[in-house]
Length: 359
Ligand code: V47
Ligand code: SF4
Image 1 (cartoon, helix red, strand yellow):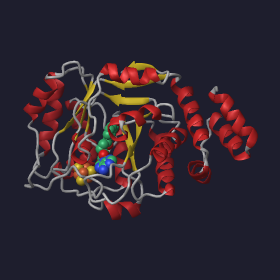
Image 2 (spheres, helix red, strand yellow; image 1 turned 135 degrees about the vertical axis):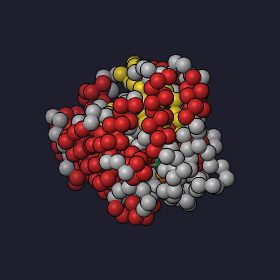
Image 3 (tube, helix red, strand yellow; image 1 turned 120 degrees about the horizontal axis):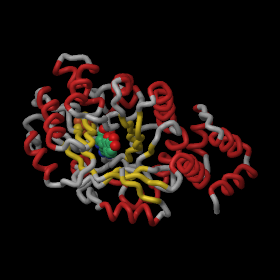
Image 4 (cartoon, helix red, strand yellow; image 1 turned 135 degrees about the horizontal axis):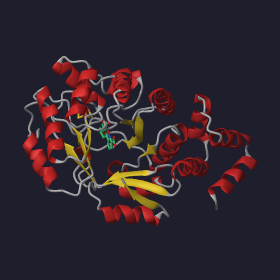
């Protein structure tokens, strides 16, 4: 059935669905109570259909992906987030750091790349010059490659070690060739969880301040939410509404990525991880609330390829890219698929009736 007809049927039966549909289709924002009720009590099919309508109003049947590669340049990190199984303490067995030249050689082995995604731990053994040099060398060797590198957490760290303000760090990186920042490190915008799970990492106010500074300097950034662990539904809705407000202010966010918590191989392994239902509902509510974000990403490395494909019908429009190598998830879940070819991505999109768009 056509999505608009499905929504009409729900609206006929139920006043709440009618009000929500009218608000969303006329471009209005849901308030906290409405959003929470929709997320908690909204029928699964209604939520997905409404999210898909928001998605199609923005992108019709188009679904985006890119030929990219991740470079996780170091797993040495002193931040010690409880949900992370990737980090190693300085000097600990299994810790690694790639030299700049090694990274250049790796990138040369995949010459068809359109984008590189560079993130790593907060490594006290690396000097500020390493980061600037890394971006400069990548730019010198690959003049047209899009460089998405360093989360707001890393930018904060660079500001600390260089004793330079965030503006200056971002300006230097931009001059060296940086195009945009990935969305990691946002976790959940909650003081409670910050204290409980990642007290050594920057809090959400600092994360937002750095993202907004990047936007003002003409550097777009992504944003994430790490969900499916100890957060409450209220904290998820608050996270989304806070991001919506920040986007109203700067318009610098490009993509929102709901990251499904991987429970294996970290201190929170006693938790079950989010169900498929929770994942799809979270993607749908993200699309509905963040209608001022250009893209919602189905990050298939964390979601699993098949669930990510279904997420494309539940509000997501971006399938990220080919990835090739991704050490964060692999450090926790050994059987994670981390590489899809262009053809595989296009087939997954076409199978759900979409039009693949390589960007
Ligand atoms: O910031 C750590 C998260 C993030 C776990 O911007 C975990 O396009 C799930 O941000 N389960 C890094 N997640 C990944 C990331 C990302 C990925 C893909 C695309 C983009 C983008 C950004 O991974 C970290 C942290 O929030 N993380 N441990 C875990 N157990
Ligand atoms: Fe370090 Fe990032 Fe892992 Fe936190 S999530 S411990 S900052 S590598």
